[in-house]
Length: 111
Length: 113
Image (cartoon, rainbow over all chains, first blue to last red; front, side):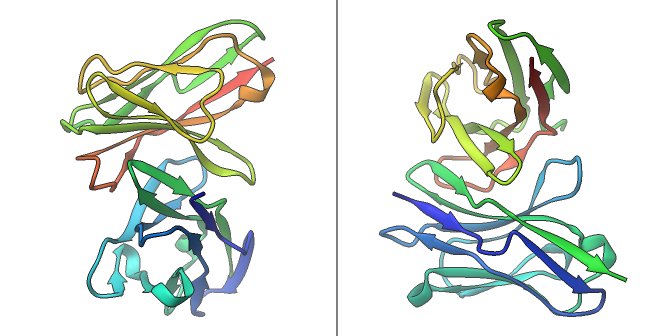
């Protein structure tokens, strides 16, 4: 069955430090891949997506993600985090009309 | 464009009551879906629709019904509410079944006592 794993429930980084959030998926074929962000009490906003082509994709707010087929991974990165990046981040995979989300990683920022 | 709208924002139900969560989009999107969000569980797909008149089940469909009589609206019905259905419900839409770039509504917080 299709599944998405975000191994880190919580991550804490200092403001200005780099960030990497991990996402692994299990699916027979390469699915569509997404990262969404949810600020407290808000809905979800798309950060970036991968359908095909260049495996390094750029998103909004300075985020990027790299698709690695051999590792079934789609990790999210940002070179320097800001306090406003504190939120919950969800990886999602889409295939066959269904989009399945991981359980999320909550990002905390230390001043 | 209003995007994806959901009503109500908050609702409290007693066990056994029924209700309908409303979802509408004004972007002429073919694909619409419902998710529930629970702490530590992420978002789980309840039902989805690839177009008017077509619906299908997601990961957690039990206790919920949907219909899609128009492109714009995709209501979610709780037939007999249970405390396990206490959750935040999100509706989402995307341009087409192959696109999958979803736009989310603001959510409905439902409490079942």
